[in-house]
Amino acid sequence: RRQTGQTVQRWIIERRMAAARSLLLETNQVVEQIAAQVGYHHVVHFFRQFR
Image (spheres, rainbow, N blue to C red):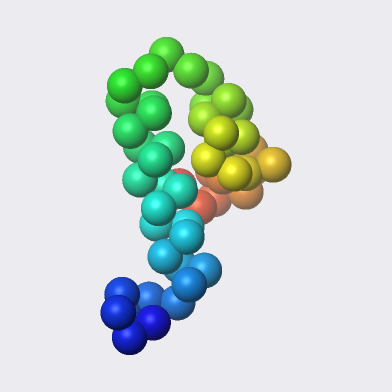
């Protein structure tokens, strides 16, 4: 936390969302595929985090 200013959990979420943003912009994959690819087993949870 001292190095990033965030909790480990928040840091992981931020990394996943950054990867998802890139995939959404750069690929033609559907959201469900991207959610699974960045580590979300449930699309609804991915949507809530992505907001």
